[in-house]
Image (cartoon, rainbow, N blue to C red; front, side, top):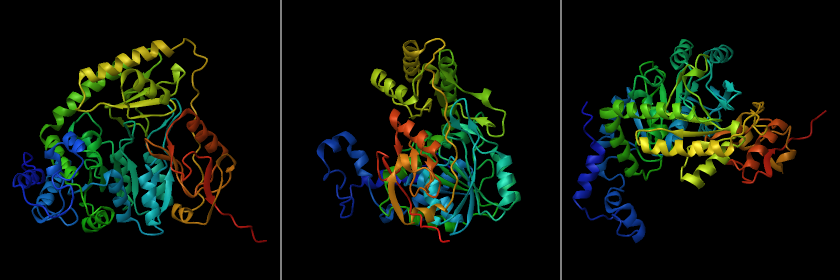
Length: 491
C-alpha cells in the first residue's frame, strides 16, 4: 500500500483550501468566532480543519471514504486485518474490546493490575472478572505482567471464559511471554485482548518486544498518541480476525456506541499523519530513541543512590522481555519518594516526568527526544543524588506492596447496589462500591465489590499523606468512602 498517502489529512487540507462558506458546527467557523488570543496561539491552519462529518470528509461512525482509506493504511502498517480509529483514547478502545466479546454474566480473565477503563467496561458489560495476580517486584515496588502458568490455571478452572486480557507491555515496559499466552488461550478457544496502550512503537523495531498483532492476539487497543506521534486522545483498535474469534461488524457497532458523534478531525488527521511517519520511518525513529534510552539508562546507573532497571531483570515468566524506552528510576535509596523527586525536578529544572509513585519516577524516551533533553535530565539527577544520598541511609524507604483484596461481589452489582458513606479509616471489612486508584498509572487499589482490608487503608493513607494523586471516590479527600449497605442476617 502507498504509505506516502494521507487520505484523510489531505482531504481536510483540500477542503480548507477551498474556503467553503460554513453553516454547520463548530460554531467558531474557521476560528472567526473563537477567542482572539486562543486563535492567535493555536493558528488558523488548525482551526480551519476543526470540522465535522460532512460528506467530503467521511464519517467515523460508518466510514466509506477517506477515513476508511486511512484506517486500511493503518491496518497494513500495524499488521492488522482491521483498524478502527478512536477519538476516545485507548480507554474507549479497551472498553470496545471487552463489550464486543462480553455479555452480562460472562467471565473474563484479567490481570488485577489493569487500567480503570478495563473495570469500567466490566461494570458496563455486567461481566464476571476472573482476576489473575500479576508478579510483584518487591525490590522496586511495582507490578509486572501475568505468567503463562497463571493464565493456564485460570483457563483450566474457567474454560467458559469469553476472553483473556493481557497488558503488553506494562506501564514500566515489562512484557510477559505474549505469544505463549496467545497460543495457550487459543488452545482453549478463547480470544486474547491486549491493552497495548504503551506499545504503539514496538511493532516498528526488531529490538523491541513483540507486538500484539505479531503474537496473533485477536484485538489490541493501542495509544498512538503516547509514543507514536499523534495528538493526545487519539488511539487505534487493531483486529486480527483470522482465528474467527472477533466479529469486525460487532466491533464497529460497539465503538460507534462509545464514540461522540462530534468526532474531532484534528485527532483523526493526526492519526493519519502519525501512521505515515511510523510506516515510512518507524524503524529509524525507534533506533534513535533506543540509542538515547540505552545512553540514559547507562548514565543513570552511574549515579550514586539511583537505579534504572534494564534487561538484567528478565528471565522469569512475568519478565520475558523489556522495552528500553521506558526509563524507570528507583529513588528510595535516596530516602525520598518518587513524588518528592517529581516535584524537585519540576521546581529546580523545569522537568516533567510521566509518573511518580512511592519509590520511582518514570520517564519516556521517544523519537521527540534529543541528546540535549536527556542530558538535562541526567544533570538534574546527578544534583539530586548529591543533595539527598547519604551512605548507609537510615531513612531509606521500605517497600510496601498492598495485598490484593478479595472480590465478594460482581463489580456491576456493587457499583449499583444500595450504599452508605462511612469514614474511610473505619471501613475495614466493608465492601467498597467505588474505585480508588492512583493516576497515573490508573491501576485501582480497590475496585467495586472488593473487601476493604486494614492493609489497603494503610497503603492508601500513606499515598495520600505524601501527596500522590489518589483518585476515584466521590470524596476527593478520601475521608469518606461509599460501601455496600449490609442487611442484618436472618437467623
